[in-house]
Image (cartoon, rainbow, N blue to C red; front, side, top):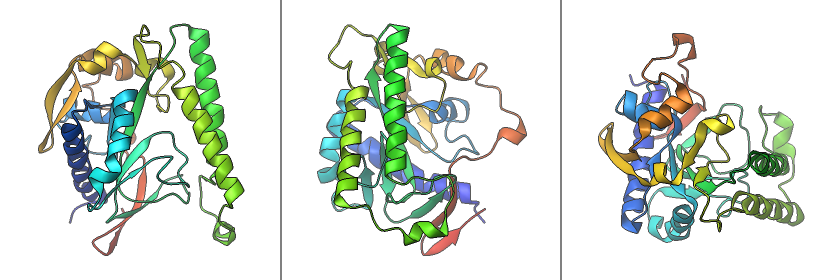
Length: 273
């Protein structure tokens, strides 16, 4: 019988295929990032114990995707979740959800829409000066934390949470204001075309590990990922070395655990490990 991780992977491949089709139709260059990039190179697909997919686009391409997606996805079972499309969603990047599924995430209880997803990150220009980098990141993190609090994101569920009233209009308006302020911080250097470094400000990695150059994320190559063909930076070896060191070396067995999903409902069945 397939394990939970295998079921998740199969749905995520559908999400990824839909995302690639959308990017191809819009002529948007995208690239795999983080653990998905590592999986593509080391495993020619998913890291066997990893339960998510990370893709990225430069900010201008990301914004074009967000503008076109609602019409392009109409009539499908996919939903592009963004700070604008889901008022209860607090994160700074998009997710492409399969609406035929429902999930419960580990250490992430909230009222945003739920479904097996892939993460879609915008990469924004960052300043060269280290002090300016720290200032931008600090502002982003403060606003991000405020939004998680405002939209009632919790590490664990609490039975009393279900007794809370839904957020009122004023509370949702405050959240929208915080989202706009966070977006302004993320994009404050976009007009400075002389800047050559970009970053996913929501990255889970330490700051310097996932600073990329525009050249690195525009010079792309095709590699296999399970049954799909995906785009990755041609200089993936240097990128992965910065992030993971000897990236071809498998981690110890006690570190080979999935991170995100705890319970999945699909095909009218509940699946857990």
